[in-house]
Image (cartoon, rainbow, N blue to C red):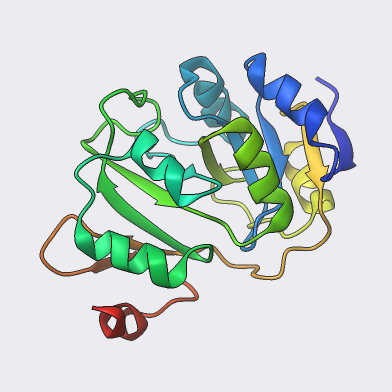
Length: 201
């Protein structure tokens, strides 16, 4: 497979590829992500293959706007909504009950991780494509990529397309917080601290 790099502004090529069951890498506010349409089981399985990702690891969902949250989540806790209004778009991913229509390849459990990235190119793509299953664009366990070249160095020949939006500003993955209990539980440390989350509540 030939891996092509094009400017991130050229989303029409990316959309066509996604709608035909493909996967693409693109920049976000944290690191470069590798994504597929959220309801395309075969394409999501391709992400696991391209990354050598263990199949039991769930894949987060990225959305372009709050209006898409109901498409992938249900019975959303008020805690999560408070976090969304305060920190979205931004480097916060929260875990909430998932929509039953989401493929098991996204998450084999009853929950799903969701985020709105604070990146103009990423949100343009997500608004056009709809919710996407997205994980870091690297070989599983490898360095998190902050540029198109770093993605290419790891995934050349494994994916068809990389959208080049320059170097990402964040450089580290988002804070991951479980919102399904009575209190927020941080599962992965990131740019947003527990104290910042508790201050919102």
